[in-house]
Image (cartoon, rainbow, N blue to C red; front, side, top):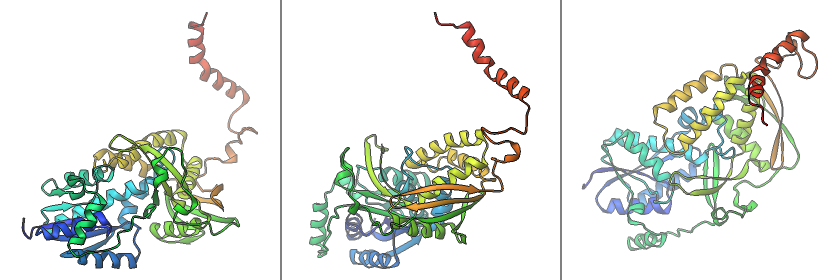
Length: 396
């Protein structure tokens, strides 16, 4: 064990800092690794690096996984218009999958024998991390000091003090987890079933009250322009987020089933994801067939469920991604949106693939593609099966 390489998923918080100090003192060569999926600024990364060495890290490594996060997961969440329980854009659960994959990939690259993380035994993250680690590297042993020893915050702080590390580990009133695809917010209110989060709990305050018009352009289902400006998908998501968050858009509280079988409640702020998903969905309504939309809705719901519960590496996920990718070939066009305080309005779309073309007739107005007799014949045939059933099964 002495001097064996160990990779620790390191955030700079109390749980992972305790783990880092304890494991380094036990003789492990600890490589502290943080994965940036949109939650760390450059200054924060520097602070985390300094803290890691203070705790005893042999090596600190920050991996920028923003592009990977988008191309491997976020792209498909947009293609599928994925909202868990029609509410939550899977902000944290999606991030954890990529973070776990990057951690285990690094561990294998350096020949580490151990991987550690700071999850407790009471949440979803332990499942997501361990499942990815076990599937990708069954030969690497997983160490979870907080979970295995059922440590309290007080236990961890006391140990660090005995090591001469007396850092003010203040427990924030609200737990904030920020990333590219939204920010989760937890507090005492989310532990109840009836209390909302106050405005002060959300990281973005209302700054603008005068409405603003924006436009999003999609090419084969992917965001390619915001307000006529091109950029990478990651940059465009960040641009939209910075504009829309000033209106305090995208706030809500999600209630759902955790992987470990209990109900959970979490607040979130996801201005860009909310707008992108709804805008993309509107464009699909104009450009996809009825049966494409129907089938994709079923698959997307299942895709989101599997992702949430940590089954990202199941081959069925690649099958569903292939279907969704294929479905986006004609999802091209621009969606027009208006931003207001706390809400947004989808105004309409323009698309070369818009199936709502006047040359085929206008709903409720005039048809150009069939005669009145043809319409009556179609209706008669459509009703035939139900007519037969009702005729043979008349209720007395």
